[in-house]
Structures are given as C-alpha cells and as structure tokens.
Length: 294
Image (cartoon, rainbow, N blue to C red; front, side, top):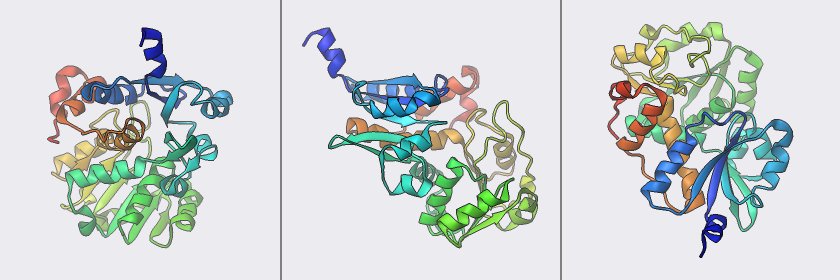
C-alpha cells in the first residue's frame, strides 16, 4: 500500500466544536493511539453553527469513523443521530460513531463522572444519601442522571434560574429538589456530596463563593472545571482533608468510551497520561503539585 492509500484508509476521529483548538481531547486520544501503536489519527474540526448540520451529516464522507462533540453543537449532534439511553436522558450527545452505517450517539459525561468518583471513593454511593449539584446545564444533567442511576435519594439542584432546576425534577423524578442560589447555605451541612457543574471558578469566569467550612468532615467535593485544576472550591476542600475530584479526572474517564467505540480498544488511564495533560494545563514545573496516584 502506498502512502496515499495508507492516509485514506487510516481510521480517524475528531473533536467538533467552536471553538475547539484549545481542547485537550487531541492530546488525550493521540496519546492512546501512540500507546497502543495504532495506525489512526485524531483531529480538531472547528465548525461554526451554520455549518454543523452539513458537517455531521457528511462525517463518514469526510473520512471519520466517529467524533467527540463539544459546545455549542451537542444538541444538534443529538438531533441528527440515533441516540442511546444516556444521550436521550441528557438530551445531548458528545460522542458519535457508526454502527451498521448508522450514525449513533451517546453522552459519556455520566459514565465519566461516575467512573472518576468510583476511582477516588469506592462505594461512595453507599455513603451519600443527599447531594448538591450546582447548575442545570448539560454537564449538570449528565451528573444528575448518574446520581439518579446510583440511587441517591435527595439531589438538591441549585441554579440561579429556578425554573431550569424545576424542569430537571420533571425530567428525572421526585429525588430532584430544585432550589434558587440563595438556598445554598442552608443545604450544605446535610449533603455528603457537592458538585460544581457550572463554569464559576473557571479561568476568566466569576469566582464560586462557597463556605466549605459548613460541609461535614466526610464530604466529597467535585468540580467539573479543569482550568485551573486547583479551583478555590477544591483548594478549600483540600485544606479540610476532604475527598476531592477535579475536572481532569472526569475528562479522562469520559473519553474512554469513545476511544473504545472507534478503535476497538478500551484504553487505560495511567499516571503518565494524567501528568501529560496536567503539563498542558499548568506550568510544567508545577505538575507535581497535582499528582494523583492512579
């Protein structure tokens, strides 16, 4: 096979978004491609909203066997593919693949969250009876769905726009208790799990102001933000020796399923991979500060 034939036949996936060039997904998936010595590729496709329908509908013609989908295109990906139960529950798709020439989709954020928290706190779902989720967007929906799956009996959804939190009770059932933001201080003491599923605390965004001293000593604190890795919320929780989970843990775990669907190998999350991604998020000299045994 000559070089041109090899390039055509090489299986490839991509991340589709706008913007997408700063995504960690190419670094992550190319690491696994090299690790397993695959003749494959993973690319970045920045696609504006007016072109996204045509792009996804022609994904196979463009040579792709599948894709990750990031903001603002998850809703369109859901609408023009055949979604599985996870995508239907969240009403958004972040992973596309072909099965019998049919474009299928799923949402791996739920399993990314659950697998990440399982790794740092085995059997946490036996410990947590009440949780707080901040936010009511796509990431929050995926996390809430995971909590419902694990049988958490009271999930307090706190959102600045109350009706969006109320909509989630309609979607996911009576274990969802909607609250406006000013109710948060009265909820913290009784919750064993606090999840920030908003962009608050992210680099360049407004800070997240929470008094973590109100949390019990056996609480778990999760933050979907990974830039910075050590958000103020997590720093305060670490100072109290609480179990913490950052956005990179969830990013790594949500990527596993897509790679398996595209390339037929379920990749492993290793300490080397974790540190490789950390080095792209923070100054390389600071990477050791975020060491987490895998």
